[in-house]
Image 1 (tube, helix red, strand yellow):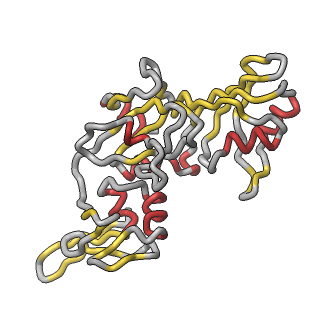
Image 2 (cartoon, one colour):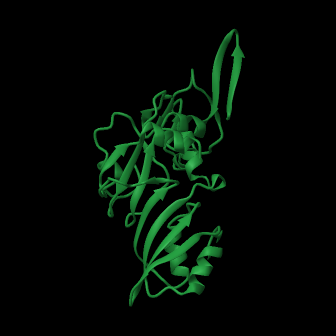
Image 3 (cartoon, one colour):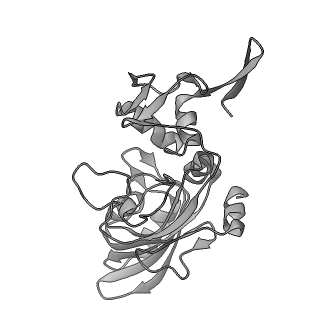
Length: 250
């Protein structure tokens, strides 16, 4: 942890890197916090910060995001949402489109999404104010598996499945090996189960397009062993203590 105790005239001050502070304050994950900083939406003591990595004194410095003061939180919230199509996975959209926060109204605690599902993708999405857990679940090095059901155009060959499994070359590099199996084939479509542990932008859609099978429908059904059982599209619930413990022990 980027946490240091500084002794100054008998008192102890907490010094944190700015993105770490935003994560612990429940504003965003560390990676998303870096985006907020680069977008010039973060101020420290009234001064806009443009680069992550600066250290702040949590007892003396005032941190604001979009004009709202941020404070460290002791109570964490963990939510599972069955995201329907048509909603943006963000807390605010400048174009006025529906966001996931429109689906979880009534919460007294600010939460942020763990990773993203694009507008036309539905399924399991976690929201929390626990930045450390969000970081763990989204960073590729931790290898947390996400399972998707994908309906694509055309009949997918074994050769195409093999390419998806070994890794597809995208603009930013080759994807990590995936687990892919055919669930159903029709005259002009195929339904696949795809398991990945990365989170590149629109990754599965781009992977399928690369092998000549554009996505028709896409749904995430599992994160690790967590499933959407009992949740209809648009519904959400708090995670159980058992589920929270499971995620933390992954």
